[in-house]
Length: 247
Length: 294
Image (cartoon, rainbow over all chains, first blue to last red; front, side):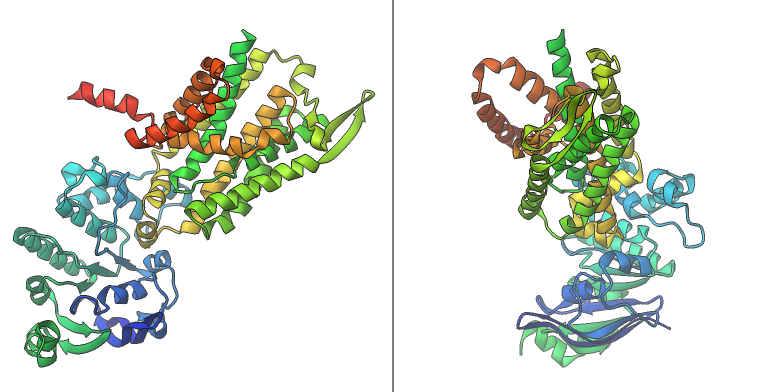
C-alpha cells in the first residue's frame, strides 16, 4: 500500500527549476532512498513535501489525501516529520526538553489541552526516557543540547523527529560527518524504526548506508529522476554512473 | 525613607515592564510595544478609578486585560515581520498610543474640581490610594506582591512544556515549526501575556504616582523595557530583576551626580555586557556557582 505519492512535482526558484517533474510512490513500511550529486534537488524535494516551500506544480498525496500547501507544523499533524541536513536543535533547552517540545501523545490516548501544555504525565516521562535509551542519550538527558558532541546532536535530532509519532520520517543526510562506527549504529536505528512500522525516506551521500538499507532508490540529477529501482540495478545504471563520475 | 520607597516603587514597576518584554524575548521577538501596553493599562485603569469610581483591583484587572487584548491584536501583524522590522513596527504602535494619550481628553467634575485626562496636560489626580488612606509603604508592598506573583508564574512557566516551547521558538523557528509547533499560537500567546503584564504595571504605576502624561510613554521607556531582559539575560526571571536593580537602583540613583552622562554609560554597559556576558548579568551568579561546584 502506498503511503506517499508524488505526482509531477516541480519547484522553481526564479528561473531555476530545482525540482522538475518528479514522480514517485513510497510503500508503507519501506525504506526509500533518494540520491544524486550535489545540487540535484534532493533537499528541495524534502522541503517541498514537508511544507517549507510551496510546490510550483504537481501534487503530493499522503495516504490518498492531498497535502499540498500545508505548513510544516500541519505536516507534523498529519504524520510527517524530518531531520535537517545542517542539524537544527533547540540549543538553550536540555536534551530531555528537546524531545518534550516535539512530543505527541498517542492518537487514542491524548491528554487534555491543559495537561499537555502545563503538566507532565508519568507515561510521557517513561516514553521519553525510552526514546532517550533508543538514541543512547540517557546519560545526557539534563545537558543542554548545545553542549552535545556532533554525533550526539545527530542522534538527538533523529529522536526528536520520532517524538512526534510520525508515520513517515524524512532523513536529510543523517550520516554526514559520521565515522564508520556511527554509521553502523545509525543503520541499526533506521532498521529499528522500520520495524516499528515507520516508513523512512532517506536522502544520503554515504553510499555504503543508502545501498545497504534502502528497498528502492531514486536517483536525481538537475531536478529530474534519471533512474529508479532496487539498489543493485541503480548502481549498474549507465546514466547514474555518468551523473556521478562524468562520461 | 520616602526616597527609598520611591526607588523600590520604580524598581517594582520597571521589573513588571521588563518581564513583559522578557516573555516575548524568549520567543525571539524584540518588542518596543511594551510601553504602549503600559500606557493602555495606565490610562484605562485611571479612567475607571477616577471617572467611574471603581475599586482599584477590578480597575487594574481591566487595564491589564485591555492591554493584553491590544497585544493580541498587535501579535498577528507582528508575526509577519522579524528583527529590525518588528522593532520599527512596534515603535510605531507605541508612538500611536502615546499620541492618543497626548490628545485624549475625558474630564468630569467631581466635588467641584475637574478630574480626568486633559490631553497634553496629562492625567492628573489619580488619587485612589490617597483618598482611601493607603500609606505609600502599602502601595509599594502592593506593587511588589504583583511583581512576586508575576515572577513566580514565569518561573513556573519555565518548568512546564509551554515554557520550553517558547524557548524552542526563540532558538530556531524553522526547527520548532518542523517539530509540530504552531508559530502563530505561540507568538501571539506570548505577545498577549506580555501585554497583560505591561498593562498591570501601567495601572499600578499610574495610581502609585497619581499623575501620568504622554512623556511617561516615550521611546526611551520602551528601550528600557527591552534592555532589562537583554541586559539581565533570559536564562531565568531573576536576570530581568537584577538588570532593573542595576540600572534604576545603581546607575540612575547612585550615580545621580553624573547627570546626563548616565545615559551614555547605560549604552556603554549594554555593549560591554553583550560582548563579555552574552548570557546576561545572571551569568555573574551562575559562573560563581559552577566554580564552587568544581
